[in-house]
Amino acid sequence: MSDRPDSQKPAANAMWGGRFAAGPDAIMEAINASIGFDKRLYAQDIQGSRAHAAMLGSAGILSSSDVQAIREGLLTVLSEIEAGSFPFSTALEDIHMNVEARLKEVIGEPAGRLHTARSRNDQVATDFRLWVRDQADAAIAGIEALQKAFLKQAEAGADWVMPGFTHLQTAQPVTWGHHMLAYVEMLGRDAARFRDARARMNECPLGAAALAGTSFAIDRAATAQALGFDRPMANSLDAVADRDFALEFLSAASICAMHLSRFAEELVLWSSAQFRFVRLSDRFSTGSSIMPQKRNPDAAELLRAKIGRILGAMMALFTVMKGLPLAYSKDMQEDKEQVFDAADTLMLSLAAMTGMVEDMVANREALRAAAAAGFSTATDLADWLVRALGLPFREAHHVTGSLVALAERKGCDLSELSLAELQSGHPGITQEVYSVLGVDNSVASRTSYGGTAPAQVRAQVARWQGQLK
Ligand code: ARG
Image (tube, rainbow, N blue to C red):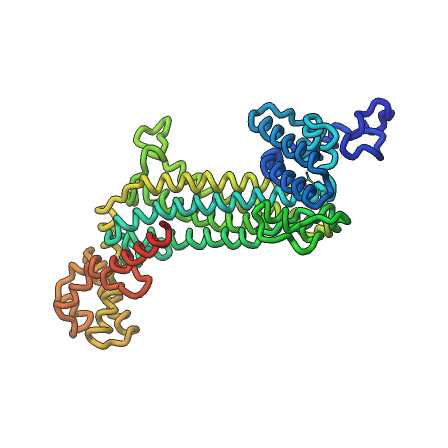
């Protein structure tokens, strides 16, 4: 393929073909082109070009008639893309050259002046930052919607008793509201991570040009401001060479997806016939083509899995970036598909989880029955022995252990042991102990800050309601 005579080779590229006698091989074009995916940056690309052109005009680098032609031409290009009539070309590699080439067809010569004091390197860094910034905002909105869904569940079930688990073994009774609020907290940190990443990424690379800055008297503060950035990036090499903003986005997305995965797993367990803690809505369940009794939690299972893709994207981009010398290298074109896919996956996951949480119906009876099983109030008994009888906790733990063993032999719950049986564990035990052996008493007593008592849950619900308004 490579030893065709030059006369048979495709024509040299119109954008940079000056020093080339022939165009690229078809395979070269296939591996090199990014237009198939980076067309998603069209709006950011045009926004960036409009800001750049306006700045070149104000700085006296372009005439006002050129700036006006460029501005109008870019709007035409934008509407063509949005109407679906734009002729995307693989030969033109990427969104930047596609837009510029079309601008030339639309407005002629002034289009060639747009690229003054700019390079595709700072252009793509700017476009991508704008895109990721939008996605960070979308992620925050999606997270807040999901928090509100959890919060509604928490409010309704502030005092519904359910088993709390460690090692997936019944540990102590907790309240449904408390369990829901645990996710509200996690998601609150997820949103905060996107906010932090957004604040750090909100500096403008435009004007860094290829890598060294430019000899034109540009006004970087003006383009930064026009694009909603806080300031221009202070080092032109850094501006074109780093993608840490995308890595931070992927990292925040991965952590959030990990949280979604954990609740998804709980839903899979909870909706099973063995747990029966929740019923998922028809909207978020599927049937089986062979087993008519089945209601499968497919959406929850998929949400349990999506972390794989998102974390995979993060690993991929880290691997692309590691060891790259400054400044821009084409390796970095591999950043976009990963981030696009991870962002799409996260937004869909958040929407699906929000729908599931809004619709899910807790089975209060099953929750309560499970809470009472498994000697879940054993710790309450031990705490009572400490409080009422002054036993050291270690001894109380031992006494309680012997009573749990007794109840286990008899096949009953601690609260079903007679006073005489309880006194076989410790003679000082009185009738009063029964007040802590019920699950409601157990959760109501856990009033320490952040504890599971309904009063605490209601206070936290109110705090979050104020925060998420
Ligand atoms: N499509 C390229 C990318 O996504 C744009 C930057 C190209 N720069 C270059 N010097 N070839 O990274």
